Amino acid sequence: MGAILSNRLAQASWTTFDWAFQPFFTLVTTFIFAPYFTGSVAPDPVTGQAIWGYTQTAAGLCIALLSPVLGAIADAAGPRKPWIFVLSACTFIGCATLWWAVPGLGSQGLLLVAAAITLATIGAEFAIVFNNAMLPSLVPPERIGVLSAIGWGVGYVGGLISLGLVLGLFVLPEVPALGLDKAAHEAERLSGPLSSLWLAVFILPMFLFVPDLPRSALPRRAAVRQGLRQLAATLRHVRSYKTVVRFLIAHMIYGDALLAIFAFGGIYARATFGWDLLTIGIFGIILNILAMAGSFLGGVLEARVGSKRTIVASLILLILGTIGILSVGATHIFFVFEVPAPLPGRALFSSPSEIAFLACTLVLGLPFGPAQASSRSLMARLAPPKMMTEFFGLFALSGKATSFLAPFLIGVITEATQDQRFGIAVVLPFLGVGLWLLAGVKEPRNP
Image (cartoon, rainbow, N blue to C red; front, top):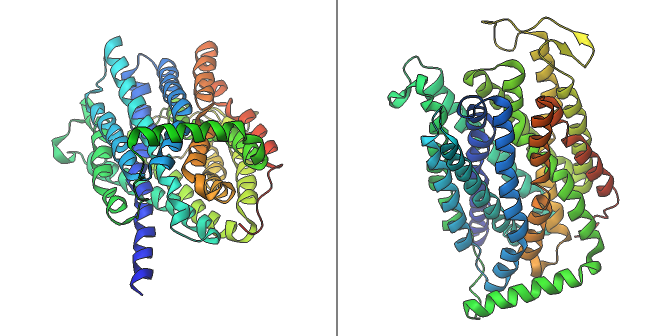
């Protein structure tokens, strides 16, 4: 009985990792700080979207080059938690620095803010590699998908609550909590330090209660050399894992689109409709509720039809939702139907174009969580057990090897056309090609 309770505590504590990191993705990279940066810190929204794209490009290049190497070293050395601690500290420092991102920064100030965002993103994404690698040791194979989906769902709950706190304490009141100055955008700037504090507190259960691998008997340098040799051997014999390779390539492509949608959704919505912080925040709450519900529903669906079919259904809905969002502008819906422009001082989401945009968000938001959670569980089913962290390093590589490409293309196309919609449209071919490649992946029937 004690062993069962201990294992359940470990599983519950493992999900707190997603809870701890999600405010960084919700508050900083999507709904609060990113729109503030592009709209108020950068010289203009188009330049801001381009700069933001370049920060994600820099982080993606770093993660793509180093994640499989670190994964191989960790497999040889043993414990994953020391890596997670150092990487979480990078995210903590990067987020805390954002308090000083005030409007009117010069080029050097913009560079420092971009560097902080890049550091925080690198820390978060690398930490995810090592946390994912602990998943198969916590549950039997047939339960991997369920726990993965619960982790994503718990993460979205954390993002939702953190966003609600920001709106309820600092945006809605006439006099914000802590005496923040709305005119100085202190609520938006506080999203960074708040994410740091949230991370520091809520990641503790993972460190305290999730079992880790024992330390290798090899000296540290020998473990590093062994890990690198194992990675080289894996890459040489990668043809032996044809199904895994095809899945990794598919994930590399559609994962790039998922990251771009998440990173630029709030930026695009603010630019299209001129939404203020409160409206963006409420939009973020709606999207997080959809993603949270989708994650839990995706776990149920995956238990019935498998990981691959869940991802396929999710990608189809993401394509339809993205097309729908791109078809809506301030004065038109579905590309051709003209509608009255949103009026100043209007009620929340009351114009026809905003209603259509929210309807398309429903199609886009529900499959977002299942696409990510089922990808993680499918990787856990396909990877050799003794090479789990290394293959999750390759999984992170597949999610990041071209992750700089979509943000880079969004930045370049937005800058070239001076139209943010053309920039966001980049994600559609990524989703389509990823879906086509995924169709050829064979999922184990009895993992």
